[in-house]
Image 1 (cartoon, rainbow, N blue to C red):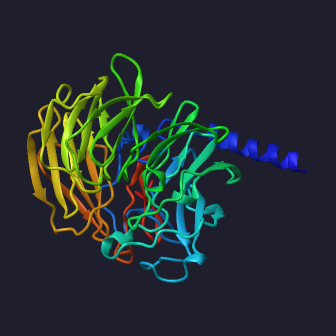
Image 2: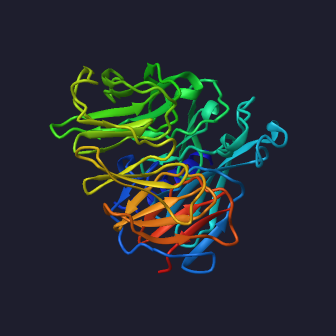
Length: 419
């Protein structure tokens, strides 16, 4: 019976994998972790009652983004504790992985995960608003990889069956844990800065640790794979004082750029071998170097940066939002500021990263809706969209898929844009 169930599980996994398309959004910030999509005909305006194809009530809140594989959506949430900051009995905390039908929004299955205790109590103020499901899953088309901080990294099949589980350390932080897994060949990477100060690579089939790199301090960003124009790939991550590059196969450090001194949340983006790190200050780095390249492979460095949201690259420019709702556009060639303007009406906190698609910038705020801007080097605000009956926290980035947007709040998963 167990053999039959295993074969059935694998058959279902293969069927889902075979229905996947090139437009699938299989990790944090989509292909390459860059927050960019080639989707077209995407919606500009919507509300609770207008231009929403479906919405699904979620069992609990979460600030992770959904991913899409074929006709399935996967995302995480939590229940039982901390629905309001540090409220309740922490031993009731549960985390959940959901599988949702892409066409109808119906929840197909849910898997529950009891966390290792004690979990992180959150610091006061808005730092408590991340919650306990901040890491976005990743998939290779046959398996799911889900990171739950000190509870570890889980590998599931596409029916939710656990295949293996690996620990990355037991550390916690009052700001929580947020970094998402990244896949490369037969490896899966986790930035375990909070849990152990490590960047760790596991064999994605067995869960066996392949390599680790120490010294990843105060780092809440997801690593990014950088393809070099001359061939080869690097793995780049930011930590408190430096931006670091590693050989993704071996964990050997390749290069570093210093000159920073702050915790770092934004992930880097890359284009044609240039790495753009927008953090406490912004810098362009020519990848492919060796050793300390701070003085040799940095075309420009400027003051404006980002506290939490990651940038996007589009047509020679970098775009991002700062926490108070100021939109930035910077020339990627020389770092010169093209515009720096506040959106209207003035939004509050912004933690979600910008997504660029269909000539538009989708900018999600925590409680003031979604601003849609034209993706061009002149600020043009196309729309300001609000769900009138859902003002719950929204820290997740939207997902462009098949001419629609998938977006989650603490209360609902939305499919925006009617077919």
